[in-house]
Length: 312
Image 1: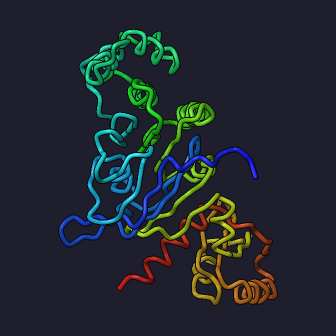
Image 2: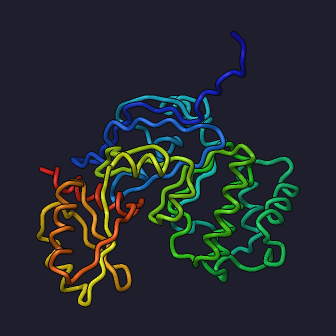
């Protein structure tokens, strides 16, 4: 039987562990990411997202586990991985007393790029930085610093981008423009691993992984992650929603009660118990309940609560 060859995953790691002193930060992480895929990392602060990214790209050596990134061993061939990866940290880490062009030129020198000038010109043009190329990086707004950081990541033509909460602190338009660029990079065959707290950004990813306390709790497409948690939800309207919210949190089947404008979102995992509670509340005549399809944010909160309840 003939057919197209199946490409090996760009990232293929198994059982990665990392501790710092007594704190076990990443626990038995296994992950596969394909070429041209945007793969999102979700999880609360301290969940191990950044440590996982740094192990994958060769900046940290795992205590145990194995795997490959871009075909290189994540333990033994870290230098080779670093040459083909662009890593954008959460904190702006370029030189604020240099201009945009000077920053990119300096990075080109660090990579010993023979065609440095051409690469800098191309990177400036692609990220629409031409009119600002002689502006000091320290004078840029958050959105323009973000563009400069992405230009720096892409300067050496990496095959894999690792983005650690890249849009923290920038306005919605800058976030949207940034994601338009990321989607174009993925369409060009570049693989992107991105950590984020924004649910709208998570929904832009091809697949997601949710981490808490260093453990991978859920993975798949956004639809698969939502379906896998099997949550039930209602939108609830009432004359006094905040007073109702206090009462609802104590009732069977209810795990989350969140205010959304003048309404409440009520979420639970036990569909039968939540439905019975909804019917009982509607019978009292002081609230209106309508079915709601839970989303990623509801799943995010539910996973956090479940993880917290499971802690010793």
